[in-house]
Image (cartoon, rainbow, N blue to C red):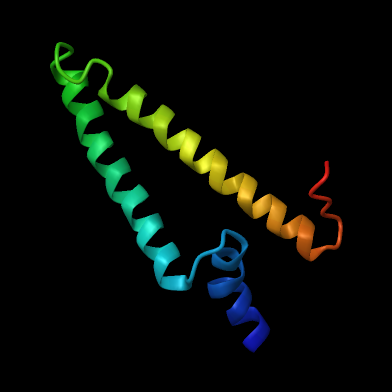
Length: 88
């Protein structure tokens, strides 16, 4: 039971070098940003002259940030599995 709770709440934040609360804050920021971008996209659908590049530019920035975070998590999992070689 404890292992399942750790897996659900703690393993992933540790993989990216964060505490549970820090990870919750980061994920919440991404969620709020996506909600704002959703509103921009709907506004653009009705009025094509506004938010012409707002959504696409921000999604690209978010993808870069998430890509970095995914790389950190991947390296952590490799290290934990004993398959990490910093010389590679």
